[in-house]
Length: 278
Image (cartoon, rainbow, N blue to C red; front, side, top):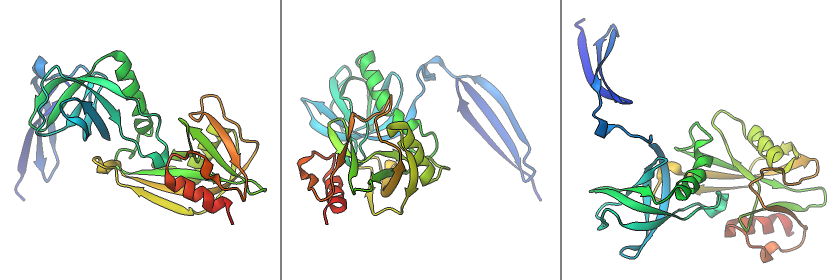
């Protein structure tokens, strides 16, 4: 069988590498060609994050677009055919699905640093803005595996022997305690860890989901989310733990319409009514 060679020059950090391999025997030869020109090196590594944001600028009004990547210094916005110039300042707010109760979405100011045919490279106007924005995306990156391509969100529908239903306050809106499923973890383990960390209770049992919802990710389809709502029973007295992302918790009485509460999403109110009312 004749041997074939495959050659490729690739970037690796600040270096150019020449890779040569022989097929079918698989011999591999890698050596450095040169350092990348200083202009091609990035002081702040960029992370690909599928995220939809809303821009606010007097010339364009309020427009939604997709973030291609984020760094500690700024972000790149996929926004073709724009008419913004370098130096223009605008406000940007991440768009979060209300159904799953993302962390509070900060509005930060950014400045256009460069433009291209497919979008805008922008820098954070100040360090506070950079901190707020990168903190918001921490929930996505902290899950490490698979979170950027398809998310499974697990909500716990906790009831007690009297039929009361537990809800929590997330930034002034009521919803059910929840977490994301980490790839490789079971649903039960993920729910148990969240309930212990947030509410200080032990999961006794988690039933099959009584409701599901699919969120398509908007302009960031690879950030699509499947939301599952699992009836749960717990052991212990629920109370907010130190560092909890929730502001307070509340037990809703069986037989009483919860429509007077401000839920994060109408679907959550509908589900609460279904569980509490005969």
